[in-house]
Image (tube, rainbow, N blue to C red; front, side, top):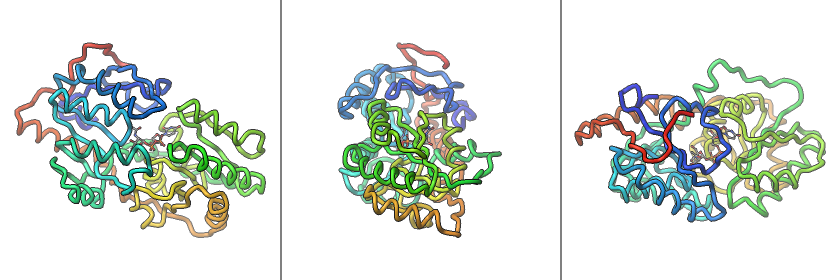
Length: 348
Ligand SMILES: CC(=O)N[C@@H]1[C@@H](OP(=O)(O)OP(=O)(O)OC[C@H]2O[C@@H](n3ccc(=O)[nH]c3=O)[C@H](O)[C@@H]2O)O[C@H](CO)[C@@H](O)[C@@H]1O
């Protein structure tokens, strides 16, 4: 929206990593778009390779490619931009857990994207400092994260609706948690539901194999309900009506902090330590006893957490668009940043 407001209408590229997600559910149906038809793979590096190969011809005539986050789609897009000799901007640059294995492959992917980028949009001073330490070659700008713009827009007019029994919202999808980690989380949820500490709502991930495995682990336990992947607005409303969120997600850590909903991070490390310092997030890992004990403490506490905004004030999009416009002007690349597209183009 902020780019379009400056006459830089973007072309969206949907790689198809999660083919069942509908762009309209995320407010992405108002821009021209193209699809690459590259569904996610068990091997994320293979997905990076496929996205790279298919994206190169699509990107060739773009003035700038913007990628966001740390997915295989984002790295594929970044490498394709390089191969197509197109400049690259990275939104959400500089987040680091400082452990290549956790989260894997995200930490590896974001380091690789930042090494390639010409424009690095760091959400916080800490993420900018990470980039300076790595001596990246691109320009670093602290802008906040555009994800906070979205959460503030999605939650505008919504009230926190916490009444009746305690409600716990859960998401769990990081690869390093598949297997043992997921089993620990499932054991904790079974105990929480069996002891009636809270009603548990588990949001299933778009990856069908992962969703099936979570369902199987938690089957037949009263007090646990499943919600299929939902729109962004529904996800925000679900957070606002929860007393506590348990998640290993990246974005949800930022969103919960901005909404003032406490969150237990189902990981041993996070690339988002700022909201831990604010007291809104707490690292609990995936050990069942530790999770249950933290849930009891948080739900039993009389003090609440306030909304915290270490990741942005809701104006990151405007800042990023202004920097992009200046940067393109300096290079006399005044054409829109959209690429011409030899494949399917249309509005969804
Ligand atoms: C473009 C992309 O994929 N980027 C990745 C993603 O990683 P993640 O770990 O945060 O992934 P999720 O947990 O899936 O959440 C993602 C968003 O989806 C919302 N959501 C969730 C469940 C649902 O049913 N409906 C929803 O709408 C949720 O509120 C949140 O806004 O975002 C990170 C931060 O930007 C990035 O670092 C990372 O590259």
